[in-house]
Length: 109
Image (cartoon, rainbow, N blue to C red):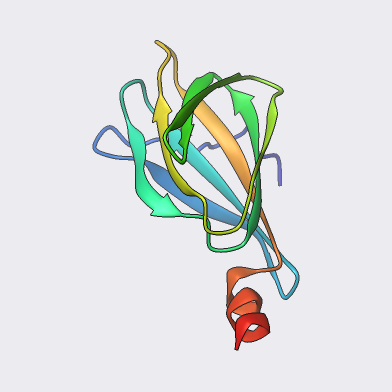
């Protein structure tokens, strides 16, 4: 799979697709058109965001981080976040979650 082909953009809202879904790793691809965002939520595992195209504003626990193509941003477990496409171009990024959130819940029980 080439993650830069057939990126799942939507004119209505953010879109995503699973790239890897294994016990110790979940990789999602998120696609945002200008002005679209990933709603506020808490990181449900240990997360790294890798920007593949475009520019994003990632608010982590109230602090804005400006990231662009090629940037890798770590996000600690349970950190509140909001991700916005702050640029004028389409943006896509990968979300690496270790372990897979389904396993994270088991570790916490």
